[in-house]
Image (tube, rainbow, N blue to C red; front, side, top):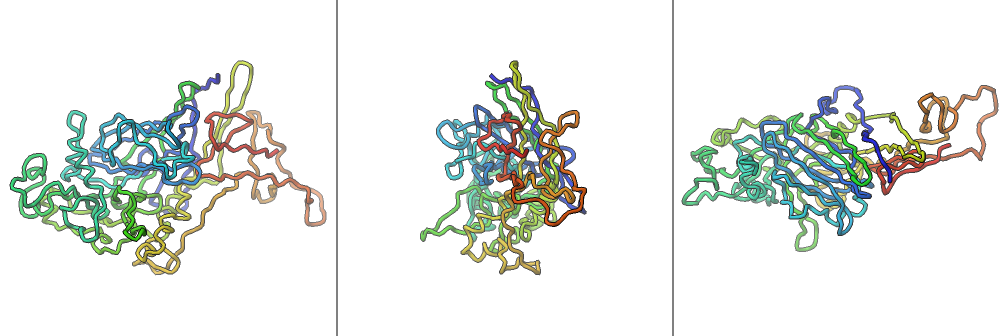
Length: 501
């Protein structure tokens, strides 16, 4: 049986100062976006998640598991975390099929409700999703005067009513935007539980919270509304842990935290995509696949929804809510602008790390590298392809023939940038282009051949010959596991083994 020491798997991520960029990798291990670079349930392993709301207001958080091969949205749900709340969960194998099961004993409100036995990954993209990475995105925050915050608040360890919290996450038709008796997400900064009827004979007690929200005409007209602001730049603290009790493996770290990922609320609904009577997919600018690493919301053809809704100062006063901050409308940026900022913040042009591979009769020591390239899925957006026939979606997806309001030029989406060249033994010694992955021992001895040397003699061009080796190694996935000298720690289904000598 293999015995392993406790060690870390580091995400190959670095922050590079290349100008003034609002989005940045956090230096204090907190942010409004966190990326768990690797989860796995292979060969008896489990992956734990731990999320902390560090603020004094309610946070709505998107948790999304993406499979390692192509970043498909394999399982996502929302958390509604009261102030200073913590949530823990386990990602384990699905004994009945592909994918994973997420389980928790925590009482924090989830949307949808976790069934007994845990949330089983839907079969749509479950195949191959036994390993991947996790996006944890701060969607919005709400002060304690909002109904959603009151219902999510813990009393003796249990939220007042997760059922009423979930009423805020249904799809709202365009004709219902602004009507607080229509449950669901009205705009990306306004939702309604619709629990209270204005015509009810009695609107007191826990059901309506008239006394908590304030009286008067304005309060009665919008007693169900929750109004959201931007997620604080340091709102979330996230960590992860992979364990295998039978094999002795224990590895964990803080997530990669990003600050100022978004500057506006990004509330979306949590209903499956809707198909009309003709079998066509209905365009939904606030669908569950958002927010992601590129978009907070799509542009809507409904004026009130596109503008982020309108709320009077009288209503805000009646609800004891401060005036809405600037930038409270949906986060809709040209092209992949949100992802461009994120990619610049995460930019790294080299991978440097220690590794070990040692085999004796008494035991084994090995090292795997996990290299995650988050967000490659935004290069060829499946949402845009699905909604290609819809005029509103064409504008939102930044097709080359369209222009968003406020932007003078139209930009088409980039193509998928994978695979990424990791190493090649056809290196150009003068420029360093396509240089191979070089490895040394602790005494500076090269382990995969001598360093390339510049030819010192004059000669005829071109150099080389047709028999020169052309071996190259590529990173073909969003989550890549690299092993060394036949070592195998994580038992990845897609580990890469390349002979570059």
